[in-house]
Length: 347
Figure 1 (cartoon, rainbow, N blue to C red):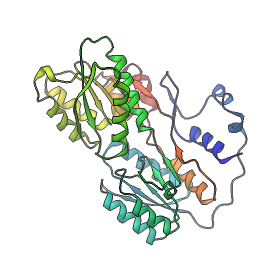
Figure 2: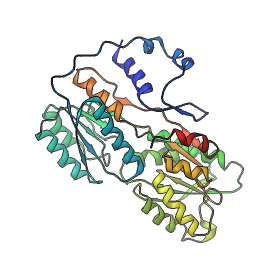
Figure 3: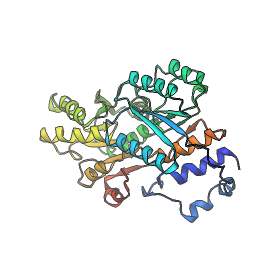
Figure 4: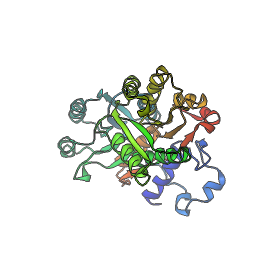
């Protein structure tokens, strides 16, 4: 069985998936879904390799702890490392690329077996990754991508399709507002400037609405993926004349959207009714807000990447070839589905 085929199956079975259209989340495939897979994915797995003489050591540079999503991502990695018997050395960069560079150099000096990086921003990675390559340590990029000319500087990138998340949010807005006459004013709460999710979620949204001239992003500003800044920036958005207030809020993550709810209510408006709100992540807190009607839709971004990261670590250490890009299955959920789906939220 080829390595790529095995990874297709691993991606489906290891991560919580979402059925198309219905929005139901499950942790395993049903029998009909399994029989629909290509035969290559249904073959029995190869026997496991002999365990290493010592636990593999994984150095992981986490970019921060700025949101509920990030906390769930970190918890998933810690738990998966424990279950896999992999020694995890993790460093929290607190949103600083320099701290990430320092941590990576510490990993090199301590002779870890493999390094995983969740980068704060896309750019500026080539020199430090060259240092890692010269040390002979393989690299996995996790969650956010890096912009490098030499793709051999890392083995694989495991993470969501942020462009598609932005496109899903835009398609929801187009459908939700299709009967509203006149120009649709949209406010956008961006994530950290220069980060992959902020860039791609914004681009996916814009390119999806560009052929619909009645839909206009009238206000856009970074709130750094945090609840506090989401509230502060939303206050600024609502400080303009009432006739310029947005009819739609697109938030690049749930924390910013939840912060914005407070500012909207302070202005005497009803979130979810006076302003349609769509955000990205799919946290339990956002689902609870959808149940009350204060958020209208949430695009899922799966943080539970720990099992796939640990399996990738083992595959790389065994000398196997991995796909350059691995994307977990994700969906979009609306307020009509929230009550039924909230119990499936693992974060």
